[in-house]
Amino acid sequence: GLGFNIVGGTDQQYISNDNSIYVSRIKKDGAAYLDGRLQEGDKILAVNGRDLKDLRHKDAVELFRNAGCDVSLKIQRRLQPQNGPVGYRGDGEPGGLPLATILVPGLALAAAAVWILLRYRQRM
Image (cartoon, rainbow, N blue to C red; front, side, top):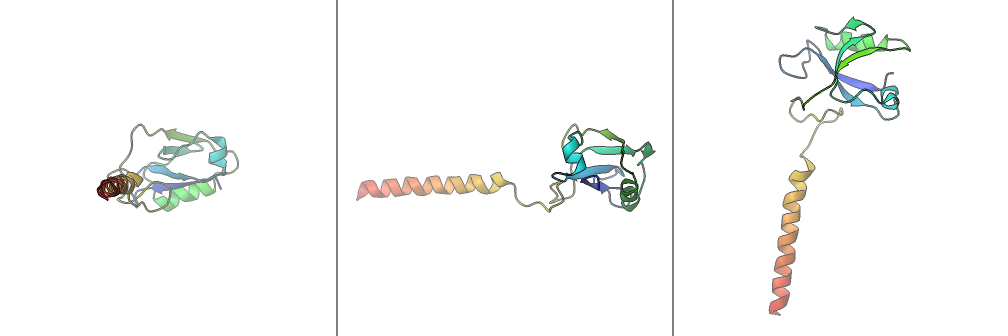
């Protein structure tokens, strides 16, 4: 394959009111990864000159599967973060809590525990 996953289409809108096809994941050591030009979040406008506008997701997938060895993509680089489905990270895996949401309170608790321990030891 081409080494990337896509999301979107008329039947599976990735962004509300947008039928476009987007790169959701670049597979390590795949063709797109080794080429280095395609990025996660890029909107794919055309494959080998064929416009992807208003295609169903499965029809877009079929175009990529039949693209051949020499593939030309017309893309639009994502300029700002796009809002995807809730809990979606864009790498093909469901999202969880951001790391900072876990680390910041954890570090605060650890700092409080150390402070309490030091205060307690001083009174002994």
